[in-house]
Length: 393
Ligand SMILES: Cc1ncc(COP(=O)(O)O)c(C=O)c1O
Image (cartoon, rainbow, N blue to C red):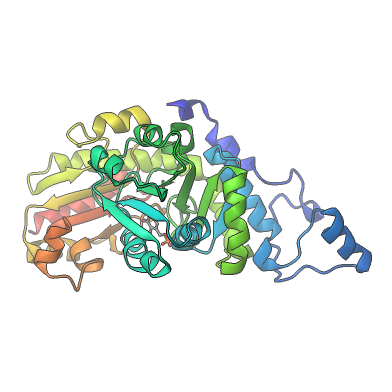
């Protein structure tokens, strides 16, 4: 993988920031302001007529946000980056900026639940058609394309089964067509995969996860060529879901240790997956780093590491699975992943509480399915906690 040669620690620590900041500060300041003032009318002329580089109003941009965007773009190898208040804000704003009534969007079927919901339930209200295709079926993907298809949206790896998409194959499929290929790379991060190098046009991330990495802020980003990002930036000025200076700073701070965290998270994910795979009380483990994963070979070819999320089926029914979760001592039950603290979630109850068993099964969510998102703790202590909770059932 080309990203083996990238000096991620150097980029994480330095990229996007000034060598020396205001008041000789080593850190990028939090410019906590909603507006930027003009010294006099001439300064307004310079800004408006002569494009003087400066800021005008918080919804249009902020220096702390700009530093975070430059750091992210450097990590992803993108020309430009645009931050949002959340991953969902990044996705929905981008769709609305790039689509118009009469257009068609295709999305793969195990994309993030809320992204799918937006495509299926909201976009049609604006006259935008949506097709949902199986993440496994490339022929169906090709067959779904129409003359008015403008966006193909994929996610890789996916949640919760960690299916990996062949982004290179997808991008070849769209060559010569006026289709923007967008990939949600939240589960991969630029450390583990470089979608732009595989031909993807726009990469999106929920920075809430691995990028910010501390379970303490919400943020989203899109990255890609200036022309596309700029188009979304102009639209974003109207939509207004801005990240804000404090979260931008928290993101910069979180990113400083991005490379270190990812190394540890990849190691922890692999160790936990191998431990669970060998455990007699576990029916099945989904982790692209395991040889039995459906996309192991593709993942090995296109990814540098496989992340910290491991999905598995406990040899138990709903009650037994809940008992296992309730007996965990260190691990906390909660959605999300990619932070320093481990989190464990039970999709059947956390995300699909009101669905019937039949509905959940149709969506591939079994009662005994558990998603474990390792943090940066010692893997042995995580395994010890899993071990004692499994011993109870
Ligand atoms: C793959 C993926 N994309 C997007 C999102 C949405 O991100 P956010 O929660 O920051 O809005 C999530 C959230 O879990 C996600 O898992």
